[in-house]
Every structure is written in structure tokens, then in C-alpha cells.
Image (cartoon, rainbow, N blue to C red; front, side):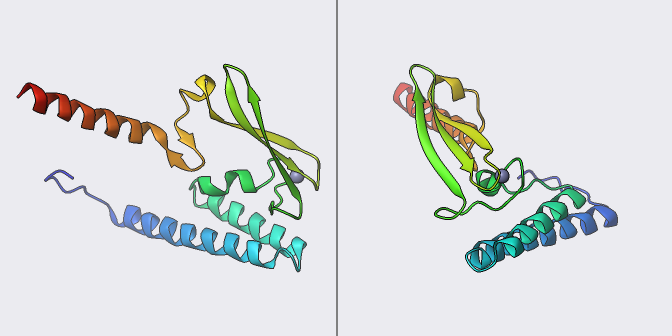
Length: 149
Ligand SMILES: [Zn+2]
């Protein structure tokens, strides 16, 4: 937050508002899909399709917290207890991983989440790890400074 104000043209402001509205709508659609799924799974898949299309049309990223809840192959909504299987696995000295199996089409996706192999990953499960790490290192740096002072 510097002193200089950033200049936004009218078009950019409009675009920003549009993107915000789209993101809200996407969250709404995903929520609706999750609620309607047990009664009507086809409608839930349709809601996810609409949410994904909206994200693509407005050039925003589909929210990271839903990435492993949508099948990468058939783009169906995955809900625990209905059409998905989660398994955790380990490879020694490499990583722990989550295997997500879509029971509609049989496609599996693996997500690394712990171990040396994901040292360079920036995002895990929708959380920015690298910024957290840098914050922690800054804190420790301050501590060192205070000791030397
Ligand atoms: Zn699938």
C-alpha cells in the first residue's frame, strides 16, 4: 500500500466489477451444485459446467479450493460418498499424495502435498505456502535483528 494511487480507466473498472460479480456467481453455482447433487446429479454437473464457462468467459481462474472436487476428464462434480474415491499414498523420500478417482468415468488424478517433491510447489489445497514461508522467514529475521540490537 504505497502513497501513489493506481489509475484505472473506466473500462478496467467495469472489467474488475464484472470479474468480482462472476466470482460470486461461481461460488453460488458450486454451492447450488453441491446441495442439489444427491437429488439430481445431472443438474449439479450442469451448474459446474456453467460455472466453468463463466470463469473462462471472464478470464478468471476457477477457484483453487474446487480444483480437486471437479473431475479433470469428464468435468463432473465430485461428492464424497457418491461418485468419488479418495486414497492417500506415500513414496518414500519423495512425497505423500492424494489419489482422486472419479467413479463416473474412472479417471484418477494425483495431488502431491508433502515431502521433498513439492518443495517448489506454490499452491497446496488453495493455500499460498510460499508467501507464508517468506513471512515466517521475515519474522525470524526481525528476531535476529532485535538480538543483535
Ligand atoms: Zn470423471
